[in-house]
Length: 51
Image (cartoon, rainbow, N blue to C red; front, side, top):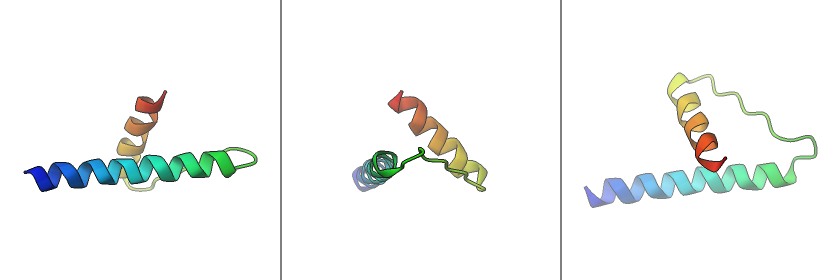
C-alpha cells in the first residue's frame, strides 16, 4: 500500500512540475487537450487544486 501511495505522489508531482515548466516557458500560454477522458478528468482536477 505504501508503494502505491508513494507512486501516486511522485506521479502527481511530476505532472505538476511539467505543467509549471511549460506555463513559465509559453509565450502565449499553454493549451492542453487530453483525448483520453480519464486523463482529462485528472488534469482538470490538478488544475483546480492549483487555483
